[in-house]
Each structure stands twice: as C-alpha cells, then as structure tokens.
Length: 467
Image (cartoon, rainbow, N blue to C red; front, side):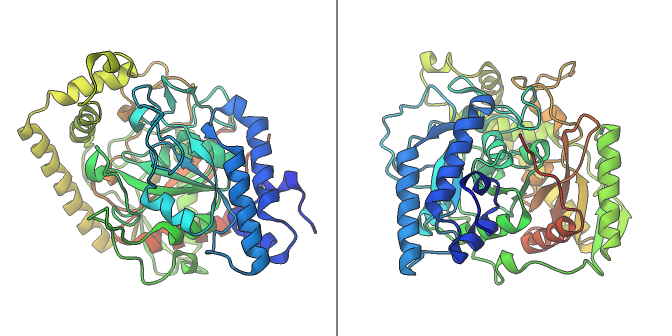
C-alpha cells in the first residue's frame, strides 16, 4: 500500500528504507512529511532551534536522484535526521543554547558523526535544542526558551538531549544525534518513551573534545532498537581528530538480534543500593526484568555494591562547566543561565587535589564494575527514579537540592565508568507518562546491550506517542 505524505512522518528509518526500495515513497516526500510535522507540532514543543527547509529539501532531492540512478551513498541515504545543537554542522550555526556564541561562525566543519551521516546521504532536518552548553538534565536555555514533552507539554522532555528526544517521539525525524555526559540521552529517552544507547566511550568519535572530558559520549536517539543499530553502524569507527576513538566492531550492530537470551547472566538492581524510586516506576521496571527471565536469561536481584558517587561526579562535571566559560568576559557571563553560572563558580573553586581525588573514585568505580561483569553479563535498573516533571525547572517541585544531579542517580555512574548503557520504554505511569528501563553492559559490550534490548522490544512492543 502506498504511504501518504502524512503517514511518512510516523515511519521508522527502517520502514522508510523499505518504502524507498519498493518505490512507494521518495526521500523528498519523507522530508516534506517531517517538515510538515515540525510546522504543525514544534510550536508547542520547541524541539528545534534551527530548521532549514531549503537545505533539507535539496538534500532529499539529491538522495532521490541517487536512488533513481542506483547510486546511493550508504544505508541511510535519504533518511531524515536531526542533530543536537552541540555537534558541529557545516553551514549551520552551532550555538549550544547560548547567547554568548557568535552565529556568524565560521561554520565550516562537521563533527565526526555528522560528517559520517553527510557522507552516507542522510537528510539533515535541523538542529535540536539543548540547555546552555548541555550542562543539565532538562532542556531550557536563555537563547531558545523551554522545550516540552510530547506526552504532556506541561512536562520536561529531560535533557540535555531533550530536543532530540522530543523530535523523535513526535515524528519530527526518525533519527537523531545526541550527546550524554551524565545521562543526557538516557534521561530524555526515559521521559519521552524513545530508545537510546550511550555506547562505550570512544565507540562514536567526538570532536571537538568535550570540556566535560571523557564523561561525554555521542549517542543515537531513535524510536526503535533497529533504527539505533542502523545509526550506530553509520557513525561508529575511528576519526583522526579523536585520539580515543575505537575501531569499528567486528559485527555490525544491525546483526545483533538474538531470538532469545538463553544463558545470559542478568543482574537486576531496583535502586543501586542508594536511590529512592517512585513505586509505579519500581513496579514497572521489576516487571520488565521478569521479561528477561521469560526470554531465557538467568535473572538475579543484585547490585554492584558502590555508594552514590554524586559528589565526585559533580567535581568532574562542575569543573568541566567552569572550563566551558573560562574564556568569557564578565558581560557575557552575566547572560548565562543562572544555574550554569552557579556551578561554574563552584567548579572553578576546586583544587587539583580534589579533581584527582574524584578521578580516583571514578577509577575505583571502573574496577568494581569490571569485576561485577565477570559475574553478570548485564545490569538492569530504572533509567529514572521519577517521571517527567514540570518543564522549565531544573529539579522537581519540593526538591531538597537545587541541582539536576539529585534526581538522576542511575545515569551518571555509568558515564564515570564509560560503559554502554541503553534506555528503552517499559511502561507508563498512571498519569500516562513513559517509564524507562536501563540496560548496562561491560565496556565494549555494546552489541550485547543492543541484542538484549532488541529481544525485549520484540517481546514487549511499546506504544508510540500520537497527537
């Protein structure tokens, strides 16, 4: 059956590619459907800070011409993708949600992941919103205002890749590039009912180097695990600009699809030993862990045994934030997000000894998790202990802490250890808000994490947002 232009915005990347191959849909029709969806829904969501219809349609027409000639550039040729506005994109400003960056540029270089997608003929739809310099776990900034959650526009989509997640959830491009330094793809995936993976550090090359150092990963954000596999295959592999980038995997991620999980050793930790979890979320994630057992895995309730490393994470994160704004004159600093300004002042006050002490704690966490994964192949936890809360706030109402790190205890530990960690939908609260399950693997076990997520997705398909 021929897909209508309106329907095309709701197709996954894999579905679009099948339609292209069958000749029932063109990349131009798909791009126009996505642009129409953005025009319709983004005024309420504010997921995009830049949309360039002319460039998008030019890229789509070029993709259609290549397909007509049988000369496609790669598996993602003609597929719409959005790019988080912290990743360099040639010809488009990368303002990072800040009024302190000159839009004039020059903007003459692509980040490695963006370059790979351009080489493959992907169709760039626009740049998605981020908190200023991607500093927090929700998405609002002084430049573009507040980004909202498609499931409830009064709620946050999370952050810092909140615009990317909202765009995917709302059908405003099936693929998105995000970044994650403390949960920044997993938080919004959990809040918006979408899929993501923060891969092993170095799996996707990152340039320019993040001021947050080796905490920050690039990650694919999609509606399905299969789409994330397509995107991962396209953007992983070494890049000379990133000295820590890894070689491509031996087997493509698109082939990581087991029929069952027989024999897999899975640990389920409902709270990591220190997190307080909303009862509805706890029940949903516990039920999701049972699905792994139904699929053949040996599931045990067990935790890694470390305490909350939030203080050490904040030393590393806040010091990184201080480095971000170190070059700014006082006038520009006065225009920063007030919360960012506060953590930069705090971060600038840490001594080298305090930073190295935090680094030592990070190394100890890595040791603990390395030994843990000798006993267990995967670790399951909630992605978030709470559901999406009011948009425009850094913390939920009534929070005893002013900082976003107080409500995302399951994400930042695995930035410190550089492990692959995915988030996939596993249910809804009674208010109809999505709940996320986090799947963590040992370093370099990205394919195993993806395979397990694919098996869960097949066993428990989830409901997509509809307007």
